[in-house]
Length: 477
Image 1 (cartoon, rainbow, N blue to C red):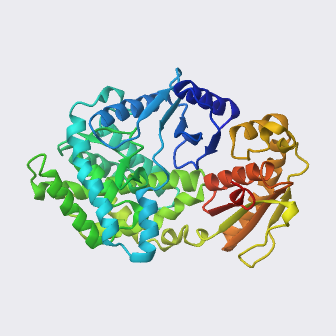
Image 2: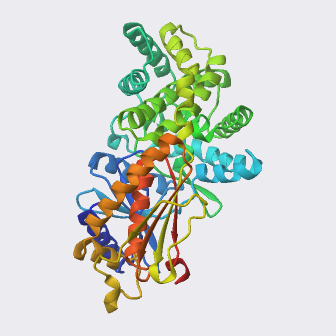
Image 3: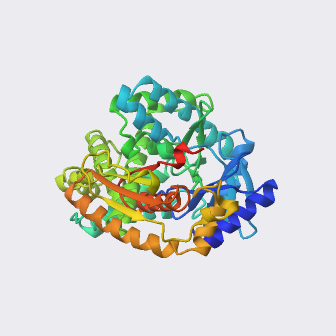
């Protein structure tokens, strides 16, 4: 996020709440080009968002207000800039359903605690699809008003060009195109008069105050009920056990019956088809972000998608013949090369520490030694000025000082280049630990800012685990 956008978000906050922004922290990017920051003061925190795509923002803001007014747990919108590129929304914290299940699963397996959270989500889903979807403004949908023929063909071709071709899977292009046409026509015969969330998966569900909240529905449009259920239950890295998946499917059907009559056999038949197109859409995204944009952390989801695909193919009963598509999918499910992708590049932990030279250079707790220690003391020090002495590198005033009145930008660019060189090699060789430290006089301003900026850069660009420790600051306040 550049300085101009940051200042505009701060101005939006201060105008909306008549309070000064004291903290501004960039949040890691996900698969989108939107940028988010947590900002606020001792009174409140909000999430500031920036996105150049005005049409996408319009859809998000319109859907947010509608869903909120219908009693759906979504972030409240506080303020929107005049250019519709920046907005402030409720801070729902950091715990996603995916994060929760990952943590709990390590201790308890896929336990009843996890299943109970999924049931909360599935209880809310029909209300989103049917009640809220009945009178939502579909004219603002972006890029399409419905999950129609064109939308389906976009997804199928996305899969073909950004996954199959980049993964070097052989196929007869005309035969595959013919199957795509037949397959999409079949899916279009399902009832499609409901709100389709589009990206209904565990990373887009937040857990807060013992309840579930929903985010990232800006791609919503008219569509079939089965699609969002498929998105959640076949969410790649969530890796839901098959027995649990069936249990949750049955639970959703029981919830759905509270709103409408359900022909379970017909619903289930279409469900398998929508699972298939959802998996292919996800693979297209993994291929584009991973193979094409070289963002390796997207490749880590491929083995999970292949596992889901293999399970689906064992019992794929569609009322039409799709010989070339099935041939291609079987090739994918049996590809040992694809199953190994991302597996050896997911265990690198980078520990980034800020410290004061007065208290010595931090030790590397991994026991490997080495790594980098960067000396920030040559950078103009905000700590020399009275107004900054009680602040840290996490405070907006200090960040502005370092960005506008020091050589921090040039210093950090050099540090990033050096660390990046090691990260690439460590990932290739399967190393597990890298230590990076930033030191300054008090371990409060320059080193804290540098550590946070490097962490943000690495989280957004590499498949690594980043641990940030502010040794002096964490014991200071």
